[in-house]
Length: 80
Image (cartoon, rainbow, N blue to C red; front, side, top):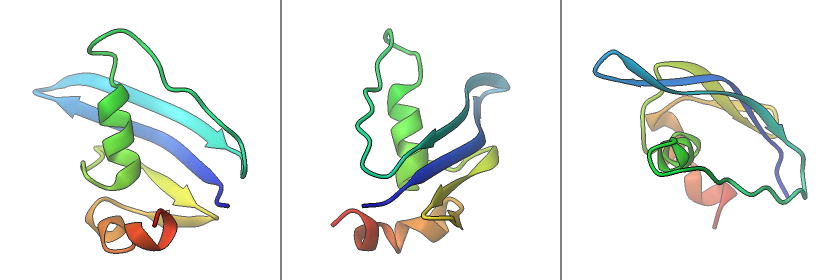
């Protein structure tokens, strides 16, 4: 199991802020992500997976911080 921490994750498109999240997910927990169309659910998951580049902030897995493209190469070691 892994723990996930998201700090000041911010994404903007064309100068419009679309996502700002500060959240910790405990190891072994189950979390539902829901919201209306356009709320940023897919963007949020892409940022966690390293498939989108954050404007600011960090995503940490087991206290190891990953940024954007650096995480893509290690993705399967956590989720595989």
